[in-house]
Structures are given as C-alpha cells and as structure tokens.
Image 1 (cartoon, helix red, strand yellow):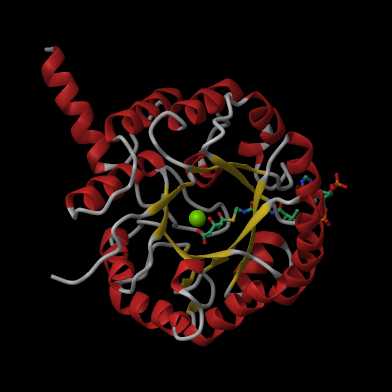
Image 2 (image 1 turned 45 degrees about the horizontal axis):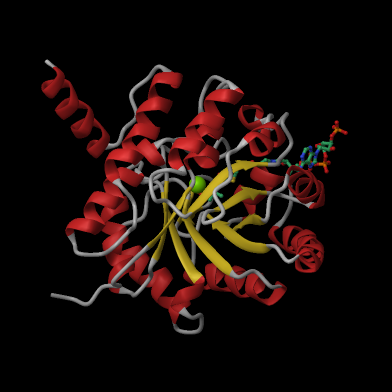
Length: 306
Ligand code: HMG
Ligand code: MG
C-alpha cells in the first residue's frame, strides 16, 4: 500500500461556498446555528462567510451579523473570503482574524467573478496583505479554475504555477487549488499539483474539489499520494460558485471524513455531530443535500426510530 499522511486538515467551506449558491436567502439565525453546530463536530477550520458585494452574492449579505453572533471557540479558526480592501475592512470590523483572498488561473473566469484581470487582482491583494500583516491575522489564497475553466477550457499547469508563485510572493501562507467546476480527474491532479510540488512545499498547498462529475474523492486519493494533507469540503456537499455555470457543490465533508478515517487517516471530526449540522441546514433549506454519508446516517436514524 502507498504511504499517505497520518492526519489531514479539513477546511469546512459549507457556510461560505455552500450557502453562496443557494437559490433562496437563508435566514441569518439559521446560518449562525449551523456554524455553531459545525463548531461542535471537531472541525478546526471553518470558512464562515464572504465579505463581497452583496449585489453580486445576495446570499451572504449578512456576513457581519453572522460573524458577530457566533459562539466562537478559541480552538477553531473562523475565516472569511474577501475580494478587496473593502472586504478586509468589513471582515476586520466584524472580528474576523483569518481571511482568504481569491483569484483564478483563467482570465475570463476571474473577470466574471471579481471583475479584475489576474494581474489587477494580485495588485489589489498585495495592498490587502500589507494591512493584514500589520494586524497579525493569517491569510490563505484561493486559485479557481486550476484544471478546467467553464469559459476557456483546459488550463495549463504552468499558468497555475505562475499564479501560485505570485500569491506566495505577496505573502499568502496557504494556497488552495480549486477545481471550480469539479471536472478534474486524477491524471489532471498528478499533472498540475505534481508540477506545483516541484518548487512549492506540500505544506503550503490545499486542494479544493467540487464534485460535479463525482470525481472529487478519487482526486483526494491522488492528492494524498502526492503528500497533500489539507482538503476543503462542505458539509452535506452544499455549494457551487455563482460565476461557474454547471458547478455543483464541494466534496461533502461527511464523505471525506468517512473515506479518510476508513483509510486510517485522522481527521478529528465526529461524523455523527457533523451530520447534525448538515441535517439542521437541510431542514432550513428544505431540500436534500447530496452527501452519500449524510443520506446513510439519516436512513439509519429513521430505521432505528421506526
Ligand atoms: P466591482 O463592481 O468591480 O467593484 O466588483 P467596485 O469596486 O467597482 O464597486 C462596485 C460596488 O460594489 C460599490 O458599491 C462598492 O462599494 C461595492 P456601490 O457604489 O455600487 O453601491 N463593493 C463592495 N461591497 C461590499 N463588500 C465589498 C465590496 N467591494 C466593492 N467587499 C467585486 C468587484 C469583487 C466587489 C465583485 O465582483 C464581487 O463582489 N464579486 C463576488 C465574487 C464572489 O463572491 N464569487 C464567489 C466566491 S469565489 C468561489 O466560490 C471560488 C472558490 O470557492 C474556489 C473554487 O471553487 O474555485 C473560492
Ligand atoms: Mg469553491
């Protein structure tokens, strides 16, 4: 058997990546209770919202109210996505201590997503990071469309490396490599992530797989084989990107946790408690979430109660 990392860091993005793509707007107190439940599941990194223009992403208009009302656990890193200095100001005012900036490996996607070229976004983030560093808060950088872009098609691994190096140069601590439309297969992960690992330490790389084509878990296995030990996922499999047509939710955290624990890799997450949070949000949303493990847990509970 191959050698895999002994333990994995999971970055839960359901409250941000998940809820940003819901058709309706979720009530603020539903979001708060959901995040408080996630906080009790053993997750140590939770991306709770984004401070973007609410006209672009109305689902997260209440970012400040959500953050201010959370029962913060001192052992958990609560982060928020920000696109610019205004987002940073709003996040800091709400009490956020860990932010994530986001750009892309595809010019067309970046323009549609944040109305900036890649180079313009790097310049904006350079200024953002200067302020971030004076506040003693930490910062991660997402790169979207690292494998396939919904507008430009296949993305060259060299382009991903260029953007990753640019983010590291301006001071980002961790880079999350996004398969925004969930179209990558292990061959792509070997190629693009393998290329990054020729010059970037594996500890600085996280993988962010959407599961549109059902390939996310096989891509995680490829990531593990490459030595990557940080994975983004979303409870219940919530999510998608409003600027990536056809993109479905992230890999479900329940499915990731089950898979890793069965592989003997520690996650620190209690699957039943995590399912509590997802089932709560499923009730708020009024539609089923796609996680296979969540469906299994729900059906087992229903059989026991009958
Ligand atoms: P813009 O129109 O170029 O911005 O949008 P602007 O600076 O010209 O400002 C326009 C208006 O937006 C102004 O308000 C600003 O004040 C306001 P107005 O004068 O019209 O009333 N504004 C803001 N308001 C609140 N918070 C802010 C903010 N900034 C400006 N931070 C902008 C540029 C980036 C703001 C816009 O395009 C935007 O908000 N985009 C949101 C994109 C987004 O959230 N996408 C989804 C997240 S990314 C993702 O899901 C991918 C990821 O999961 C990884 C993967 O899967 O690949 C991370
Ligand atoms: Mg995403």
